[in-house]
Length: 332
Ligand code: G3H
Ligand code: 13P
Ligand code: ZN
Image (tube, rainbow, N blue to C red; front, side, top):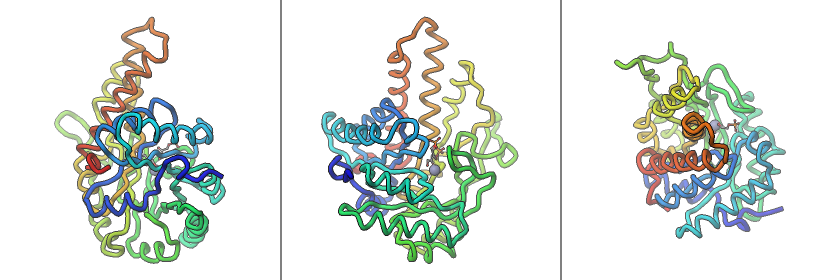
């Protein structure tokens, strides 16, 4: 058993309290490998932002949990070496069973998500409650994120054809019964790089897809039910069109890509939304740069020569998010 405190990590409790009163959101960036982790830490140190390093079940399988644990320890030391100690959370993204949450807690995660959103309501309550009881009973309190409502889109182990918005009438009961520390809700965001079907969108003069707006009315209703309670938005990549264009220019094909506009995320970050999940945008940035190097320098075969530019682009992307979208810059 490794406690997250031994790794120099923190849970989300204080971070969320400050984010709600300060009107900003903490970035939750997914990572699977060293370059992503380095870019996240470089950007968050430079912009003085707290950060949630997020690991999906798929990432855990890909990278190995002990390696990830030591990467998180490395992230803490790296920030220190770069000259500024930012708060760093290691969080399980979309845990789908009590066992995976327990396992992560034993490996040094400071926060876990139990995603029972696909289950009938009472089963979601029972599973989330069980994880909370276990996580909160640890010597060092581990925070738990639950989810109510279903996002459309596909992730490794979670997929849904249609979204179901969170029902504001359920949130008080869910929070009281489970004792979760934060709640992921569904107000129209969705996972992946093609968040809406073209027929759900309009188009601007250049033919670029414009998505339907987020349901801020549902968010407001939820905030009325549980004032000041930490709310989480998944599926919050903006899918920058510049990256899609670079990828397509250099041989990729990503038709019908569309994300959540930045101004809507900025608006959400000013509310009780205090954690915003971003994965797909990082994938796009990396892929764009790697494809560019492959096409422009066909004789290049040193991985550092394409992973290096990908890392630099990722850092730019994360800094931009912290400064201009989430408002977390300067809050560490
Ligand atoms: O929403 C979750 C992330 O995008 C994780 O994706 O399961 O493919 O690692 P993954
Ligand atoms: P995106 O696919 O929009 O980046 O969402 C990531 C996410 O919600 C991770 O849990
Ligand atoms: Zn998610």
